[in-house]
Every structure is written in structure tokens, then in C-alpha cells.
Length: 403
Ligand code: FAD
Image 1 (cartoon, rainbow, N blue to C red):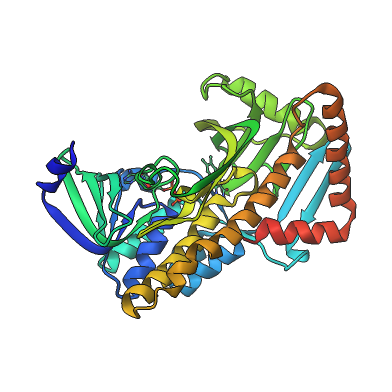
Image 2 (image 1 turned 90 degrees about the vertical axis):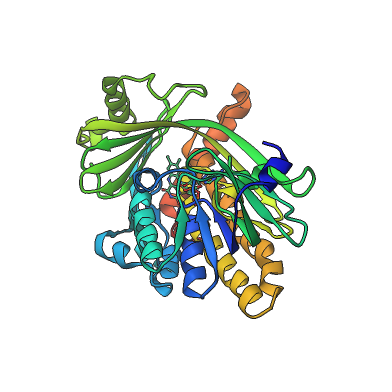
């Protein structure tokens, strides 16, 4: 489709066009709507798909506070479960940290991301919010001029265009927001951590009353409760592994081995209902703005799931942007918008640093053998320090449950 063909299509408009109805887009849309700002959310998927896409589950204390102060916490209050213990299992034994008693005393709330998205969507629609489902943003145009717009492919495949004063790209790392940035407009910092995880969702009750991090010569294994009958597991795997490459039997055998069930008790088995391979990679775009286009959530930066920060950063950035857009549109004060990028990047880099630290804590370091042995001993020493040093535990707790 050429520019002139889009120019001849039907046009809609909103002061803020939000692309993507994930946690970022829906928190942003809800706060804008509450503040009386004209906005629309464009979403490629349909509402059933977005309500069923299981991903994150651990909400930081600050995320809960944001949802609370914006009146978006009803579902979370009803179904969320407080969680504050993690357990490390290693060749040197196991130890637990109850982070409610450490650092700032903050805890996580376990609330699966698809339930959060369903809650946020319900609030938005009930409050009269507009969501255009099955509408795929193709490109953000003229973001550096006075009349930006978003070209779209509508439900029936026809092209369309939404005019806006501001566009918020909340459409993840492969979305139209990132794609539309002209070369050189932003800098992209990237890091491939060289590690991959087979992420599994099992119809199985949690086997531990803690997040389990198992460090084993065969690789990392993780256990994270999602609800009373659903548990997420992770198994470190070779780069390039296909999600269906491991049989269920092999998965449960490998989990049992790495989580040392012979010493610490069995895992409660269940059917594996979702598999995905996650290559642990991070990137951060800087700045998070190009003219009137703003990047939010995974579109702004991708963070490996090792420290469960992605959805939490998305919610934080969405709240910051919502207030900045309100100041710009309702109070003619563009100052907060000018500071959006800098404010978010402070949080993003701190989360990246902690996430990177977690990756180095949980995985044997790849690399030449001699250097690998050295780094391996450093990793074990880091764990001993985490086990024994209250100062180290306080630092861990503050970063683990905070954002
Ligand atoms: P998304 O949730 O990706 O939403 C983007 C939306 O945009 C989607 O609905 C998509 O359909 C839509 N979209 C995309 N392109 C277009 C387009 N061109 N036009 C219109 N719509 C479009 N984070 C945590 O904090 N804690 C965890 O425990 C955790 N665990 C995770 C486990 C896994 C297996 C994975 C994959 C991720 C995990 N994360 C976790 C990360 C977290 O899920 C993401 O960081 C979070 O979803 C980011 O929210 P978002 O709104 O920015 O993007």
C-alpha cells in the first residue's frame, strides 16, 4: 500500500492513539480516559486472544500501588495472592529468603498477566473507552511534524488511517512503533545473554510455597506459581531448541533432576499446556521519544524474564506517560513529556542491571574453559554471600520486589 493509497482511505482521529492493548496500552488508556483525554487503543488481536495470552505473573509492590491509585486494582484485590519467599537450590544445599522481612519489606502479588489484561480491558470498556480490535498498525507517519498519524490494516483487510496529536507505541518489540523510527532517531543498546529457557505452563499445582531457583550442572530450572492449579516452570536449554523438542517425560525428569527432588521432595505433575523458548536478550532504546511518538513497555526496552520486570516496567512507564500527556493536552504544559524518556530510562536501566545480575547468578558462564571455571567460582561465591550476608539480602530484596 502506497502513501497516496492510504491518503484516500477513511480517516479517524483521537488526541492520543495508543497502539497495543497489553499491560502498557491498557494502563495508559485507562488513566487518559479517567483524566478526560480523548484516546483510542488499536489492537492487532481480538479480545479473546488478549484475555488468554499467559505470560507474566509477578507484580511488584509499586505496580500494585499504581493500579490502586488509578482505581484499576479490583480484580487484583480479589484474586491476587501475596508472595514473598524464594528458594535457591544449589550444589551447596538450599536456602530461602523471605523478602517481606528484608530490604523495604515489599512483596510480590501473583496475578497472571492475562487476568490483569482482562481486568484492565473491562475497566476501559466500562468507562466508555474505544478499542479497535483486529486492527493492525502498519506505520506511524510524520511523527516529527505537526500532524502525525497511524496507518492501519482494518478487520476486513482494508487500509485506514488514524490522525493523532500524540502516538503511544505500546505494541511490543516487533510493533509498528519501533519499525517506524527513522534511522538514527534513537540509539539501540542490546545484549544477548547467550542463554535460552524453555518456558512451560503446566496444569499442575505449585510444588513449593516459594519461587524456586535451581542451579545445577545441567543448567538452570525455575518454578513459579501462577494459581492454585497452574505453575510456570523454566528449563535452561540449548540455543535453537524447538519448543516441542522435549517430550513431557523428559521435561518432568529434567525438572526433577535439576530441582533435586530426591533430596527436597517431589514435584506435583500435570499436563504441559504451553511451551515457548525464550532467548534471554535485552535491549533499550534511547531516547524513548521521536517527535510525537512515545515508546512504552516492551516497545521501549526488552528485559529478560530472569527478574520478572517486563510487565512491571510497562505499567510504570504507562502511568508516567499518561500524566505527562494529560499535562500537555489539558494544561498546555509540555514539560513532563519532555522529561518522559529520562524518567523512564532511570528505572529501565536499574531493572536491567538487576536482571543482568540475576542471569549471572543463575547460569554457568559460557566461554573458554579456564575463564569459565573462574566465573563459575565467582557465581558460587555470590550465592554464598546472598545466603549469609544480611546487607546483600537487603539489596536483593529491594531490587527483586521493587521497580
Ligand atoms: P505486550 O504485552 O506484548 O502487548 C503488546 C500488544 O500490542 C499486544 O496485545 C499485541 O497484540 C499488540 N500489537 C503488537 N503489534 C501490533 C500492531 N502492529 N498493531 C496493533 N497492535 C499490535 N514480566 C514480568 O514483569 N514478570 C514476569 O513474571 C514475566 N514473565 C514472562 C514470561 C514469559 C514467557 C514472557 C514471554 C514474558 C514475561 N514477562 C514478565 C514480560 C512481560 O510479559 C512483558 O514485558 C509485557 O507483556 C510487556 O507489556 P507491553 O504492554 O509492553 O507489551
